[in-house]
Image 1 (cartoon, rainbow, N blue to C red):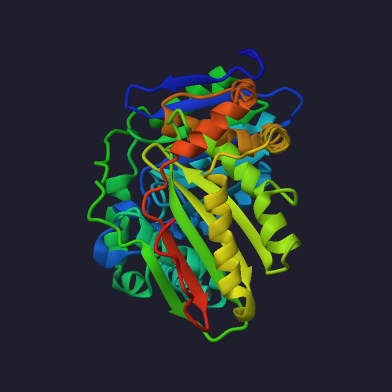
Image 2: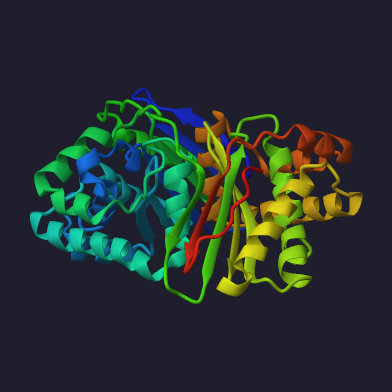
Amino acid sequence: MASALNTIETHTCTNGLVIITEPMSGVQSAAMRWLVPAGAVFEDIHNLGTSSVCAEMLMRGAGSLDSKAQADAFDHVGALRDLSNSIRYTQLSASMIGNRIDQAIPMLVDMIRNPMMASDSFAPSCELASQAIESLADDPQQRTALAARLRHLPTPFNRDTLGTVEGVQNLTHDALCAWWKDHAKPTGSVISVAGDFDPAAVIEQIESLTCDWSGSVKQPAAQGNPARGYAHIEDESNQVQILVVHDAPHEGHADSMLEKMVISVLSGGMSGRLFTEVREKRGLCYTVSASMRADKERGVVSNYVGTTPERAQESLDVLISEIQRIGEGNVTEEELVRAKTGLKSRVIFAGESTGARASAIAGDYLNLGRTRTLDEIIDKVNGVGLDELNSYLKRREMGTPTIQTLGPDALNAPAGL
């Protein structure tokens, strides 16, 4: 191995492409993540769904290989790959046996730089994208989450990454090809590799295949003021979806770890406050949870309850009560110890997966401008003190909340948190 195991290295190519490597001991596989700044925020308002269709098209042949030949070639080297779109990025994910990564890399580069984008693949790709949008009718929890996102975040960061049926229908093959050509640029793109491989060789190979690639993409700005507040979607079902969303520190903020600790106290398994108070003691719901998502600009906490119409109002009331109660800064030492154990367990488990590590180091770079080792993250968790956490809770800023419900009848929402 050309570099020390579990040493993270960041290499910036002359064209702006960033390559991050982390060789790992005790594994035989390698995983790659390639994030290209071509997510839903970059789509034209009339063509929402472009990045979703594009992700499907990129899987259908590249370079000199058509869709079938490409699939056979990846199977031949034992590589698995997938493409997905998010709000900011189109992501290529791949995993393979480490000693075959050099055979997979040229094909992966072709998928991003030289996709076939065959015209006969366009209609099927659009149809699959439309089906995914229409399938939301059978997923009330996701519909609730998307409605809350639309009202809580500013445009265009509030978009559904699937797009709209109308947006997909408006899309043309030529427009799709032009959009990818305009957004698949090296500056702003990040490639991360973790597992069993030679970092120097991988960097050299990727750089040789991308050295004539150039360009950058202008980042979109947030627009308008989100509506927030309470809203209800009428749905004649025997379930009610309740989602309370509020602001949280962005990933690089000094309070980010404290907020994650709060979420672990609220929703760190069956001993978390929400499970205990909403489900265990009162039997109000079939599921309850809190989660946090953060990037370099903003963080969001989502508090979710799935229940029945008869118990919906009380479920919302108790959920709000628990959000308010923890804001009093009354976390106990026992709760903090449990929260730390849960957070550290998740970090350690993820650290044993090459795919999870590739995702983590890419995410760290994009959100923090640097990467973090597992030890650094665990030390940060261990460093949180009880007084510090409770002090944070008393000054915690959650912004104007968004309360979104879906079910037969609207609920009586509180005036504020």
